[in-house]
Length: 372
Image (cartoon, rainbow, N blue to C red; front, side):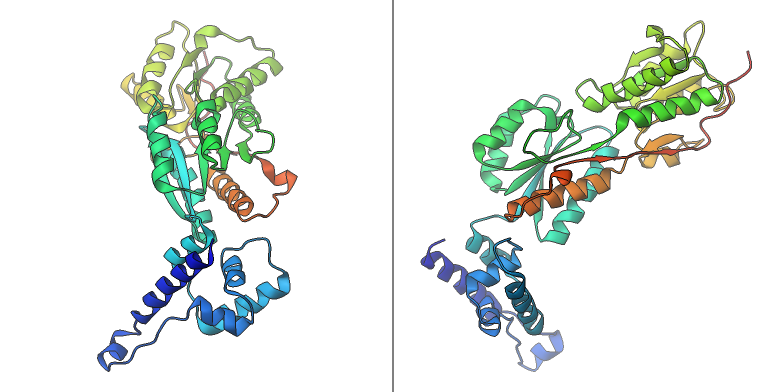
């Protein structure tokens, strides 16, 4: 930024500090306590204003000794950065965008949002959200990027696999990271839950209870996790000498209503399944609804399992056996890696494509297969 730009930013900060006051009691006595300015911090630490700004913004181009001096001065003076001046000084917005598909069921997105928000708050970034519909509005996303001037973007599934969105961000010069993409993008930042082995373990849990006719409800075909969960289910069947039955696999869409529709198809079969594996908890809760509607006891007549361990899993009756994904932790770590790269720090190769184990959560919705 030019010297004029720096002076403008500092004038604005100094102006803000003159208007600040101490506690109401002191104000009533006519006393004021001006807020410490970046100029005073620089003088206290014996460095330039730009160096203070780099320390505040956690940029890489500052030595440890200088950083310690500036941080000591900030603490001694009680300095709090002015957000407006901070943005002007660095020619950045210090904000990230979260692009997500607006689902009818909000569990997965809520968990991702919790993680991204935790990282942004810890690192001094604002978060702006852009929900996207099933039919992607690229013009709307482009307008969002132009209006907000975000420094980076976090893409959740299935948007993280959309080549048009990635091309648009690249054209706009907006760095991005991908939460649960189908594959890691060379040179990019991504995080994955290991869905396939988790799905295999959940299927093996049902097999260990004596179930041999296990229905499977696929997730939305646009989500790469849907294929991975199906693959885990099929691997478990194969390892136990069971063949794939097309009639036991039906297409869902990660929504409660699709879970109900799929359950009706499966449970009206002449030889109905003794267990149903739904690819997420919302669909599993739909299966529970239909089981009750048909007078089936869970788990005595029918075992039901889900995936994700969303809030609904504990709130159904009986509560759902499921798989817990560390979505919040994944989103938090991934966002921190993005912010680290925005600050000019290199991200270790092991952190560029992180994989996370899932946890099997056994609850009352799964039990021994009924005798026939």
